[in-house]
Structures are given as C-alpha cells and as structure tokens.
Picture 1 (spheres, rainbow, N blue to C red):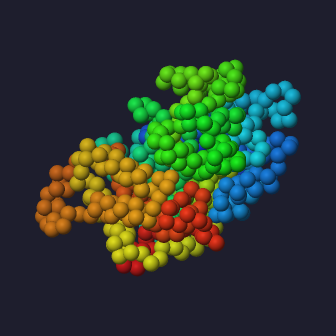
Picture 2 (cartoon, rainbow, N blue to C red; picture 1 turned 90 degrees about the horizontal axis):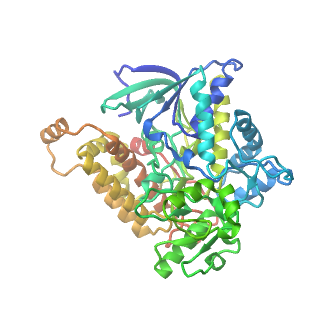
Picture 3 (cartoon, helix red, strand yellow; picture 1 turned 30 degrees about the vertical axis):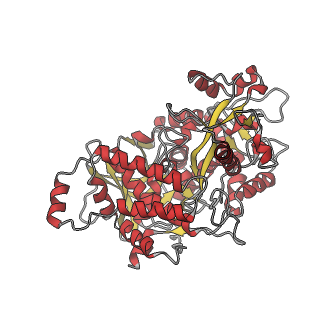
Length: 568
C-alpha cells in the first residue's frame, strides 16, 4: 500500500502539508512568507481534506499559554509544564517551546487574531486567564472561542497567499515510500479512486487520536490517521499510551459533543456532585485547578462511587455579566440545549481530548523516516510528557510549525538516526498481531470485506472497546482482551481460498469514509493498547490498576511496525 513502484504520480509537489488546523496553516503561512528571503526556495501545497475542516483546533476554547505578563517568567511556565508531565517531559522541548511563546503570540497579534482585551489597569494589554496546572495567569484567549478565531484568521491569510496552493476534497490514505524515503501521499478522491501525490517533503499536521474512543470533545475527532500512516511507512511512534481525557465535556446523550473550557474552572467554577458536595477537596489540594488527569480520575471515581451519570460544574457565582463576557459561546450553546449557566450548573463528564504521544520528531518536526515531518498533535516532541498542561497544545502547534518552516527553508540536513523500539518480551499472540498489522495490505483487505454499514458498526464497536479497556483507568486483563478482539477483526477468515478471496474483492464495495477511518483505527488502536500493556507503572494519564505507582525511572515508549516486520 505504500510502494510507488511502477506508479505514475497524479501531480508533483515540493512541500506537501496535510491538515487544515492551526499547525498546518501556520506552517504553510510561515514557509510561504519566508520564500523570498530564505536560502532555499520551496513551493507550498496545503492539502485540506473536507472532513478535517472542523478539526480539533477549531473547537479549542480556552486559549494559548505563553509568558506575556511582566509578573510571569519562563522558568515558572517551564516548571509548571514539567510538573504536569509527571517526569516524562523532554526538558529541551519544554524550554524551546516556552522560550518562543512570546514571539509566536506577537506574530498572531500582527496577523489580526482578535484576542480579548484586558481592563485598562492590567499589566498586559490582552486578558490573561488561568487554567489547571498553571501557577500564573498566562492564557491569552479570544473570549471562549480561541480556536475558531485563530483558524479564521490563519485561513484568511493562507487562502489569500499567492505562494500557497490549496487542495481539497482528497482524503489521505497512506504515505508513499520509495527507497526508504517518504515520496508523497496516496490519497482517495470522492469516487473512492486512489492517486499518488508526489512530494519532495511531506508534512503531517493531521491531529491526534481521540476519535479512537466512544466519547470525544470535538464532533469530528481524528482516529489518528497521521500516526497510522506514519508507522505503516516506517516512522517511529512514541508514548501512544498517554491519551488525555478532558474532565468537562457537556453531558447530553442525545446531542453532539461540546467541550466546557478549562477556563471555566480557572475563573472560579466549582465541581459538585448533584447533591451539592464540592468533591475535589476530597481528591487533591489544588482543587478544581489540579492537572487534567487528576480531575478526570476524580470525576470518574465520584461517578462510580455514587452511581452518577455525570457531575456538575457551577460557574454561577461569577455573575451573569462576567459569564456573558468571558464565556459567550459556552453560555449560548448551553442555553440552546436547555441550560442557563448563569443560574444553573452544567452537567459534565470526561471525554477523550488530546494525544500526548504521536510520531516521534525533533523540535522542528523531523521524523526518523527521511522526507517525513510531523507537527502539532500528531507529533511527539516530549513537550507534554505523561500529561499535557492546559493550553500548551496550541502553543506547540505555533512554535513547532514555525521551527519546521525554518528547517524546510534551509539546505537539507542529514537524516536523523532511527529510534530503537522499546517493545520487549511480547506475548506470542501480540507478536502475531504485529505481524498482521505490518502487512497493511491485509488490514485494508479485511476492512474492504465489509459493507459501508458494517464498517461503521465495526468502528463503533472499536471505539466502545477502547473506552472500556483503554480509557481513564486500565488493567492488564482488559488490555489483553481488547488486543484479542482486534486480532480477530484483522484476521482473514480461516480456510478462505484464493479464488473465493478474489471473487469477494471483485464484488467489494467502493471505499468510503467509514472504511478509511476503520483502516486507520485498526492500525493505531492495537499499538496504543500494546504500549499501555507494556508500561508496568501508573504515570500521568496512564493509570493501570495492576501497577498503581510510578516506576523509579521514567522511560519513553517507542514502537515502529517496520522494525518488527523486518525481523520476521
């Protein structure tokens, strides 16, 4: 599925960027603006698939963490991030990102992002709020719709730029590989036909993997497409087991997902049981401003102990005028669903929100597969460690994308050495599953044996399985059960003859969105499960009942399918 042997490209590109969120738009704009002055002229193509138009960036409410106020400093932001990361952060990545935060925000202000102004007597001209894990007010925001304001501004500049070509209505399927190097992208058009977009450099900005779970905080959460494509092509993935669940997603079984920003708690929102008890005091001295993993587990514990379908988040004490000023989007959305947050608490539950792991990259987005780069949530620089601190993610999108633009504008550097896989002492059945996954042609054939309805049902079942066995709390037994189920799904039926298989393929349905999502999910979900199963400790977002304490030494997990396939 990756090879381009004998294929003719449908089009030729220089730098091909995949993704329409904050990271992809920032890179496209940064690289295009740098073209006249850089030592190396690059042509920029942005592939903005239709189903990514409402990606995770657009739904970001809280804001962007940055050292902006005179009373704040880099060391404080670094320290807060390291504490939240629970011993697994790459301190170099933390310092690099935080150290470039002010210039990234100044760039956005110059572009015209409409950040909320501060009161006249404030020490910084724009309003700064505080969120969980932060010791200072350092979150710059555009009311409670920062992601939308950011993407609207970036999109307007990108669409008007003469040096950026935009492709739409194509879906990424696999990375094209030639002689051990990424050579572009296999895509699928609206008719289900595949074509090869050749590229000198391919940059993935495709988002995370929250769509692997039954409940996510955005309506169209990615199933980890970029990560799945990268590992099939030969790139290393790192720390997949660290999936963040946002503590407060609006509870409405009949409606679409809607995030209730961390900033609501930052401005004084209280977490309550339906009986009115403020329960965070029973779990952590930082109360509602504890890191997200702590708050999410506390909510889960309260729900289990008291048989609750949800808990409540009460911001009414802030006052109606302040609520309408700071949280107009949340107030309007909740009111449309029958909840007046000025006077009534908001029913909330945790939901999958952010992937701290991803494609292993340097600070500039370079992966260990030559020609492949990754930026934003799809990448893993080590910034977030075992738990992302609130509002550091949009900051990473900006800083890493701008660094990637600089790297792509320079003469090509030597390729990075491959990382070593940390998988060891695999159970025989897990080794056999990896062998199946390494044959991505088999995974695709298994998916295409299903009708569109069957593929949709299988994807739903996969998400339910992941939420049950790989959610906020895990167990070794549950992870093994999930792996066993996925192994059955990716296996061809025993005794299938070659003739019968050929006949079935000839009558197979045309590939659709559900087939493609299932193809990506069936690759990535078992890798996340394997990484979680092999981490014999609880750290940050990974809490496993069999090993409730952290190990003495924090270690990154690294997995690469091609390394396993080469050994078999």
